Image 1 (cartoon, helix red, strand yellow):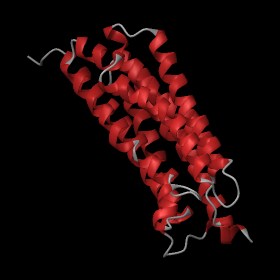
Image 2 (cartoon, rainbow, N blue to C red):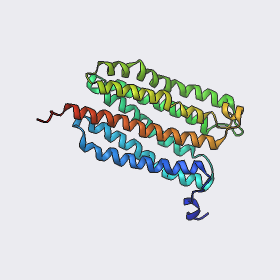
Image 3 (spheres, one colour):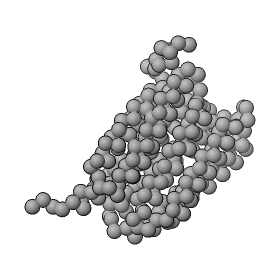
Image 4 (cartoon, one colour):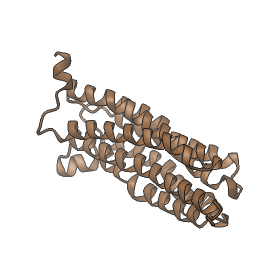
Length: 250
């Protein structure tokens, strides 16, 4: 197979299309977030930098995942989890940064990071080391273990420390922003289990025959929505808070 073959995207291949679209969208988002740092107050610059890093890391991985998929036609599972292991904890860091002014401690940061890593490691074991031919017992066991980490993050964002700190914040935009991010965790992150259950032995694979093509499609859509969406929410908080703190023109 030549380099030209690898870079050619078939017109009827929705997965290859979403790989390329995801790559371009996340690269554009990272550039946008990085340059917009100059328009926000100092306390929000780190939050926007983290948003830019999330989408940039994802864009780099999507560049390689696109070529891997076009060359092999297979789901680049390992590359995906390398991406997620870097970007998902950074998404959790955003919760800490947004609530730091309200008294968030580093212990919250580490709990969110550890929960996200647990979620990803268990998910990787369940997906990458699934016995040949598929095993519903294996995928369900590791899927349940992965869900424990997800549930902790979800609880923290809706009812736990993150939600409580957001409510104590003096900023209405921070309260609304944290609640919007909590919706991303509840709805946006829920797309990933759908892809997980499409792998051999998964419930959707067994019930409807959904296979690797559905895994890639669901994951690509979820990544674009969640990573770019997370960043846009943080950007809205930063730019709105900055504008509201500026003195009114005479």
